[in-house]
Amino acid sequence: MRNHWTKPLGVVGYYWFLTFDNSAPLRSAAADCQSRLAFPQYDPVPLDSLHLTVDRIGGSAELTPDRLRAVKTSARRRLGDVAPFDLTIGALKRVSTALIFNVTPVGKIGLLRAKLGAEYTVAVSELDAPRPRHPPHVTVAYGNSDGIAPPEVDEAVATVNRSSRMVRVAIPEVSMVLLHRRRVGYSWDLIERIPLGRPI
Image (tube, rainbow, N blue to C red; front, side):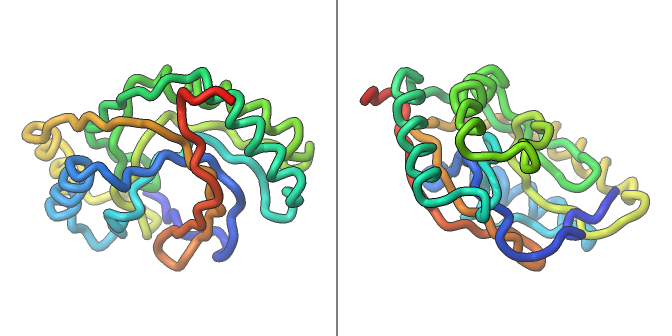
């Protein structure tokens, strides 16, 4: 396992997020996992900070107010013909720096990424190009150590998966946020909520 918290603290940049403010079932599932995976090598994600990263937009210094307005206007237009949809979240998995829930169908997130990807032409320079995208997921806990993960972690993950149920979550919007990295967690400023399925 690797320590997730090795990068500098402070403003990370602008991102497209799915947030789950109104999903009590997802919060309950995450809380259950965290209580059963209370290992010192992991920092649990606060339940009000659960999120899915759709894509990165750009660094805070990269986006002038005019560029930011252009990105938001374009996103409203492009997402206007994307109907709200549901995601299924569950199947806990250990990756090198975190414990995550898998998310399906992957194609729904791919569609959002395709619609929003054009924003990079106005928002991001060649020096600040988007990083490779990770498969869609919701992080439950971040690793805070380097080394070999205790075998008890994988055993606990397997036990959780045998008894847990998938959670269905409605996705009516995408949020633009300014992300901040804290000592052992993230916070963000909500910039704009872009509703799905509302053409302009």
